[in-house]
Length: 313
Image 1 (cartoon, rainbow, N blue to C red):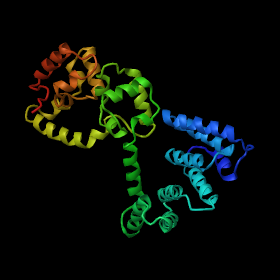
Image 2: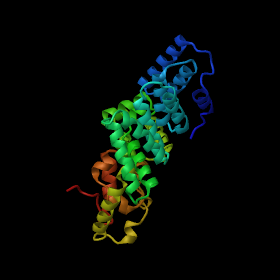
Image 3: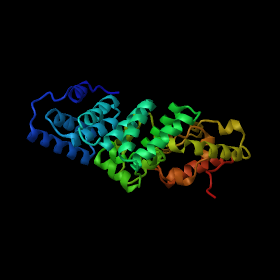
Image 4: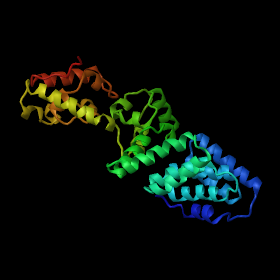
């Protein structure tokens, strides 16, 4: 969790600065603009300042929600609890449901259940409260690893995150949009070679995307690995009927290819002759700067071992 000590002081301790409704309104507007443009960190900063200056519960609610999305669970809880504790009339239902969800994420099932029961006492048909209450009740009767299940749910939510939510350059965003890559999960199903083969997509954008993914412990092509490994096994079984293992396991450097052809194979992650023979002509031609001359060269080299590129059925 990142350091949010200053934010915690403002939320838990109350306003640090003198109340200034006009300035608070300006900060809140700046926060909304940051949200609209996808700048979550900027929105959090602006909303924090607005709260310090005496902004109302709607701003505090937005701050709590953004903090939860950003992983600042302690400060998010403080925001929601402050909203609830300062309400003298009907309980703020959305804040209570959100607080219950954060409690559940932290493993405090009892606290989450108490929040949801309060909501349902006031609004028995509240759809969100009813839905999450079912999850709470079910979790008490199941015999699985709750932490593992929670992690899977969070991972699923992460993969459904739109790529527009991440801090990418305009060029990278536009290329992903044109390639119909809408979510993080979609991006993990794309290989480095496929990205580089797209018009106007260069090394700078590739490094930018790979850096963003690595910060989350992810990498390009990761979403294909389970299916791909099974397919590769089946292909290798077929290749063994054409060439012995000691040939298939030879490094591609043994083919003495041209520089351009070698670079293309490096981008595809091809390391052995067997790896190369399991690829298709379309995969190679999709690599940037890989042309017909390199394709002919590779097929000629493979033919020396009674091999060829894989044909799509």
